[in-house]
Length: 394
Ligand SMILES: NC(=O)c1ccc[n+]([C@@H]2O[C@H](COP(=O)([O-])OP(=O)(O)OC[C@H]3O[C@@H](n4cnc5c(N)ncnc54)[C@H](O)[C@@H]3O)[C@@H](O)[C@H]2O)c1
Ligand SMILES: O=C(O)CC[C@@H](O)C(=O)O
Image 1 (cartoon, protein in one colour):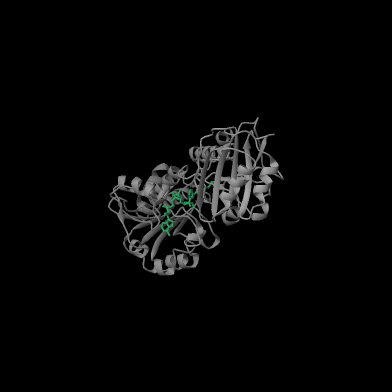
Image 2 (tube, helix red, strand yellow):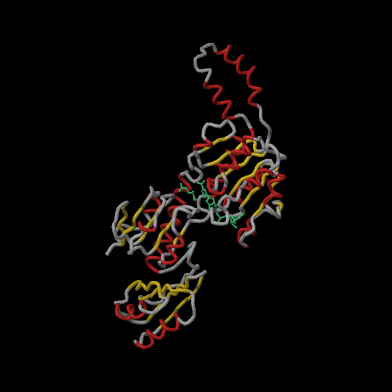
């Protein structure tokens, strides 16, 4: 029977093509889907049917998904790290240029000349007026990058090639991300040290309990006078009252962001975009392809790549019948699962077990067949969250 994939946003066709129609039905309405594929749709726990085995986010941020609830229910949540990083990096470059030159104001001014039909007169007028749109160059200025993951590291690299000095701050930098980072990026030990010395600051960190409102009044009052703050990460990372105060006081020269909000719209010192950081053909294709591939590999093989709540676990198939077991990360459960198989004379050919936080996940390849009854015994064990038969087990 074809698996049902519920899509909750427009997903690129190139990604959906990874889920062939003879094996997958794809629609924006299913009451009992096998999996959910989405972008920024705000998913509520009650909207996740009991049949859902996995959720894939075609994008980086997963703050629109109730991840803790998914973990409790044994549902892996996948994202597509890095797949839209270049798109965001390019928009940040545009944002920095919008913040350094009178581009927006200049374009708006030219629009006011629409009624003027004398070209020579127009040229004379605008040559006289253009001094009000003068800016300054990025070369030689200092950019602070907060969060040096997939996007932040690319932004840092781009700024270096534009002749800027780059200072980075990332207390949770992974080893892999550190390897990607140019040695020319200088490290700030604290966020306030970064805020005190940069002409431009660009945010590239996820919204988490620990980062919500991170850019607060204390930090913004210590910012170098005249700094331009760019936020292409998430609105919730910046305390909005503190931001407005810093703009009103002239501490911040400009705020350029991908997240409009009523108190910010219409201000001369704010440039807002409608969350278009990842809105390029390339990024939409890359994210959808990565998300669909990961979902397919999980549904067909139980493998887990790029999950935000489950361990990475990939096991080559050696038999037709594979079991996946998700359980609480406490001792003895795996032993009890294996005892049930042994009692049934079911031979284990290969297996892999990994844990992450409170979740343990196991793939067990068995010889021959197994039955729903055997699975039922495993499901009845205390601490077992779910058990799935993958492939030809009957
Ligand atoms: N505007 C858009 O359309 C758009 C597109 C893609 C991503 N995003 C946002 O950008 C965020 C980053 O994306 P990414 O692909 O670079 O993710 P990533 O996971 O590769 O990098 C995030 C980095 O932030 C760091 N970090 C975590 N807590 C931090 C803290 N307190 N201070 C400083 N750094 C911290 C992490 O260690 C990591 O290196 C996403 O979570 C998402 O919210 C927005
Ligand atoms: O899907 C989008 O358009 C936005 C994605 C972006 O916010 C992300 O976190 O990857």
